[in-house]
Length: 218
Image (cartoon, rainbow, N blue to C red):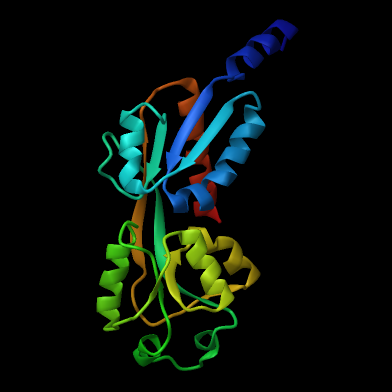
């Protein structure tokens, strides 16, 4: 390869524009840090701006031209495309009494404390359906942030239904455990929508796709 060809390739891949991403809390906190790290390693001159917002507000940010790409659990965004499957599982701290029970009963879930997201969280209807399936009525602590819910579970406040992606590190270290009460995991989909078709947006979507392939392998 000649030096001239090397220079041309460098110019082609050197992205220096700004990419504004709006993402819901779980995606912003659990998935995008890894993706943006990989993206920055490839394009260090690209300016990245990540806004964390409720799924219900991401469309507004896109329409008002305050974001170039949106990532959400909701598929009501125009031209939205699925990029990853997620599972919502029942988590407890490794030190929680239910984490060490040899035999499990649905009564355990009735008699322990729960932590739930607020009604603005798109996972809340799915969790309410799961509670109905369990046949459990709860008097929960309500916390608005998925990350705060996870920290509360880690502290021993109670049990919660959380994204597998958001708890991947704590599962690997053994700080959290999945409680198995013979209930099918809740499946949901993550979506993207590109408000602009810039090279920066395409580079991000490509890196996100590569991350998803890596996650599936692992």
